[in-house]
Image (cartoon, rainbow, N blue to C red):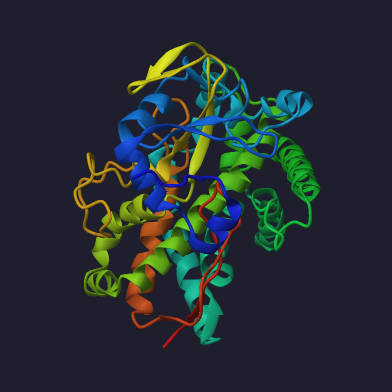
Length: 401
């Protein structure tokens, strides 16, 4: 029996979260589904099976991030030209060149050196929260953690985290009235971050330090370096991607533990499970719900013919519940191993640059929470972000006992 399918209704996401029932039906019956357009955007192909999402993700030659950008919404030709300068909206070889310059600051060895600093931040956040008894997990724990780390990466003053928090909310929450009164606020926030990055770069060029920002501004092995625009756009991407994904994985993970208390009890009994729990949280929550690509030639996705120029949207939240890949996909299991989730992208050129950092932050955070706050409880309903792009939580009241 067919069901009504609407995978982009932002009000539904705000009320219920990801439409998993619809996605499950599509995986079984129409894994590459011609989804109706609305409000000025065209029909698109909704790709819901793991195998197909991975193929689209890895074939940048057939499925472009640059032609009409990587985000779902349609933009003007003027915006197209501007946003194509961002790594997120580039295809190889330009994307490859840019990423090779940025990768220098995000090797596993460099990220591993941050572990003690991240652990100290988590303990500080718990100390502060315990002083209040009841707090908002998002505002007081999940959001500050990646913002503190981003300030560390940028070599920026920790007191700047509130500005970064506000700007990030306005950019990601442009469709949510709690964060932005109108989409212009999101664009203005992007300009603010761009200007902030420009100032930061000028300071590092004048006074280099032993930090990632200085490393990114210096020439690499082949003498190439990021120019001013490339650097500013990278910081813009870092402020959003490095903040929102970790923050919403942490918030969604905590909510999931409240909904699965036996798994929380497992983690409290054995905090070392936080290593596999971090991946399971990313699989289950899928903080980035979707990305858009544009077909560059007539091709096939699975058994479905797709024409050049067609809009193709991959749903990571669906692929991460595919029964052909995951045993008992609708079971939250913090010991799941192996766990080939694609919560950081389906591989290929755009695989998440910060995946090592995100998993480190999640692992350490939940180790500390399990050890120091084993009896924390949910104190009120979670409030979800009005967005079909980010599977986000705006507020999650908790009581610390």
